[in-house]
Length: 388
Ligand SMILES: *[C@@H]1O[C@H](CO)[C@@H](O)[C@H](O)[C@H]1NC(C)=O
Ligand SMILES: *[C@@H]1O[C@H](CO)[C@@H](O)[C@H](O)[C@H]1NC(C)=O
Image (tube, rainbow, N blue to C red; front, top):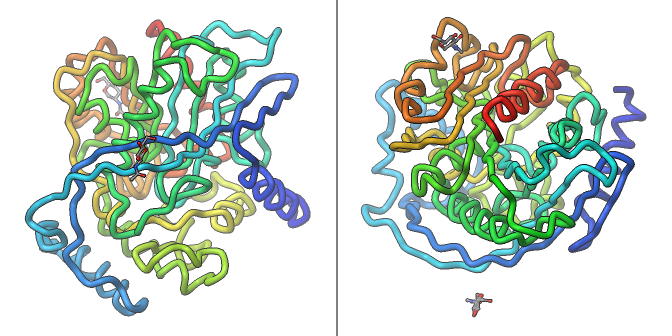
């Protein structure tokens, strides 16, 4: 991508996400509806027990402490008792389905996609070379419908403190959105309850999806976990926290991130982003630059709850686990040798089908690698083979 193209894409990204509620956009291939969805989400939240960060020295000190050989122990980070809350939020979401006249064999299956840390919903449909990087476009081309959204605290969804946003309230949001989609709401011209719902997650979005299924095994009829592992032996949480060189977002850009409190942190530069999310030489540096320039800060409690070991019991839906072969975060840059099967194959032994894929020539941010389309194909092939 040339600098000119990059500038164009950034402008397009800004325009897209400033879009008004309930806008409809149609191309020859797809019809999309954007919504601002009011929800009430109830969750039992961990309560941050430490003082808020005053500066970046404190952030670096905190990261060193949680990355310590012995670990800081998460109990010290939170009050002993969680807090049950019920809160109203607005969630920005988009539903897309094949345009009239296009192949639509699976349009009654709705993929509900949840993005990970450092992104917003546009992870699934980045306004760059969509033929290479848009999972939304690929899923549509295979006849699926897809519902994707900005997680709480990102994009056009409600802001919450970076000391409050966490796994549990993000799971509650997904559960509420799922109820609405299953009731046939916010699904554009599908206009009725879908036949099936499949959760598709990336990274923290995979943790949210698997936790939602652990809470309610009927929540999703199928599960696709991308950029994920259940194998704690190869997970690289500490290395990731360090390489990401996190700084308080508002100290990096006080204008853009003025509404975010000091609990929101983000990668200091593109190299910190690349270290965790991209694997050389299988990405375009201009795309990594785009990812960095359009990134969303992550809440510190999201970060520390992003990799909790979630294990649904008795889940029956077909489940695909797919991570880049060179995923630094999930496998310390090597997902081969069966490591993705460890624990996952047992946890999903009741599933109608389970498959773990170490996807060649990609790192953690699998959708933004040069051969992302092959990973998209793995996903839709798996779903259609298994009747979804
Ligand atoms: C949350 O939304 C519900 C339903 O619209 C409304 O009845 C309630 O008053 C709202 N609560 C708050 C705290 O705004
Ligand atoms: C998981 O195990 C299956 C069967 O034992 C194997 O075919 C597959 O390649 C493994 N997946 C990974 C990612 O190692």
